[in-house]
Image (cartoon, rainbow, N blue to C red; front, side):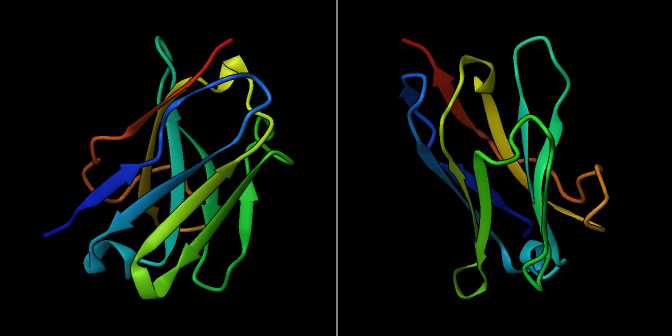
Amino acid sequence: QDQLVESGGALVRPGGSLRLSCVASQSVFNFGVMGWFRQAPGNQREVIARISRAGNKNYEDAVKGRFIISRDDAKNTVYLQMNDLKPEDTAVYYCNALSFLSSEMPRFPWGQGTQVTVSS
């Protein structure tokens, strides 16, 4: 069964840090590229970071230099280390598999996501 379970979201002050985790079923993780997406209120869901099996990564400009994506293939888990958080990072965060490092289309049904709120 294809499954994605995100966790680690919280309420954090501006400038703070969080680490999100996403555990995927083997069928999802075997797809290759994994990505983190987010959806802010009133906005479309967008991909913000991607990582390939080889460890190649890319980021959207809004998070570049602040967020770090990583993966542990032994645990079928992908992480998102978020530093220097800003109020505009407030969103529900999701992970999913992607076809390529340049893709924006998720390959599997979504998990429940994890809420990140950045506020003083």
